[in-house]
Length: 244
Image 1 (cartoon, rainbow, N blue to C red):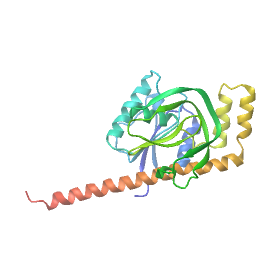
Image 2 (image 1 turned 120 degrees about the horizontal axis):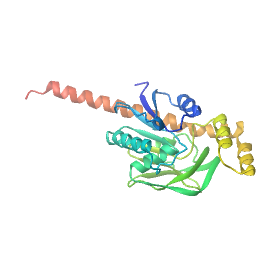
Image 3 (image 1 turned 90 degrees about the vertical axis):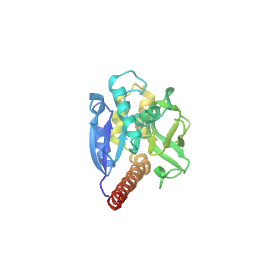
Image 4 (image 1 turned 120 degrees about the vertical axis):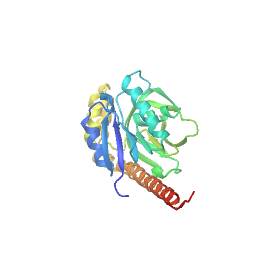
């Protein structure tokens, strides 16, 4: 199976950078839904699911957030493999029974993150790696039974539970996205200038290693879809050969 079908739940409030970035990074057939505008799939017939970042908090009392959580819950119950990025990471943790809280700090810019080497999601990525980050909320408590995958001094930066993966950092960001985000944020002038000064071609090149999480996830989805198809064919063969 070459191209798998992925539902992309876009929670970025119509930020065109998000659509561009995920279309570039995900080697799959994508069906994108603007969940902030109430768009959600009408079914669960996807090989995988990706949830993007957002300017919102997962614990806000908003109709579109509740509806997104409900649909995602249904997808996970059906065994659809899922990857969450930043807000998506937090939403998946929340749906699975974890806790998301305000950190009381804002992590932004190119950060150093360490992973444990215990997940295929990080295959090919150095144990200590660079990635762009932007978040004030964090997964304070992992879902029951979840495995921590990565962290730094700010927070958890990755977890998995079964077919569900989440990363707090932004592997999809390019320099254009990073600069526009920093200009949009309410930062004091010194911090804004310091973060902007970090957004260089050199740092971006270093952060590109983290993009492997997309390749690794899509490969996992392909394998899962192939196993599911093989199981279905075996079931059909058994049914055809059975004489009751």
